[in-house]
Amino acid sequence: MSNLIAHRDALLTVDSKRNIALFIDRIIMLKGEGNYTLFHLRDGKAKMFAHCINTYEEILQARGFLRVHKSFMINPRYVIDYNIDESQLMLENNLTAMVSRRRKGVLKEV
Image (tube, rainbow, N blue to C red; front, side, top):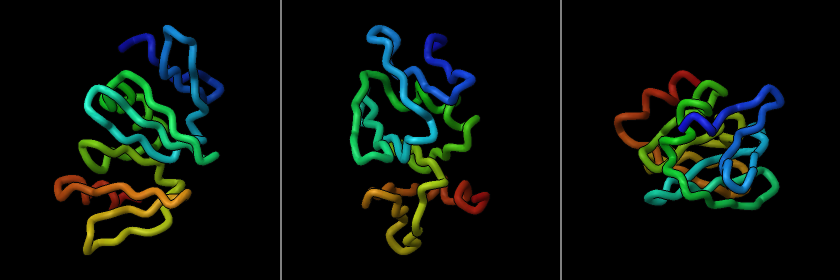
């Protein structure tokens, strides 16, 4: 979607109709829920928007985010620990993200 862009001041336009943007560096994790994406933010809030997670993937990957599962995209700056046995990442604010078998190799780069 071309109207979702990252601006010079590190904002991500998440809803162009309602003119809503989020600071990229405050996003801890995105969780895809069907055709919706739940953004977990550093201040502990979670905001849901009516776009699938794929809509944001290219923009956020260019900013260092990692797609670790078909339903999860994380900001590696907020990773606290990785539980290999459960294939689960622990992030700030007591958030967890599953890591798929196919995408474990992405974590080796971090």
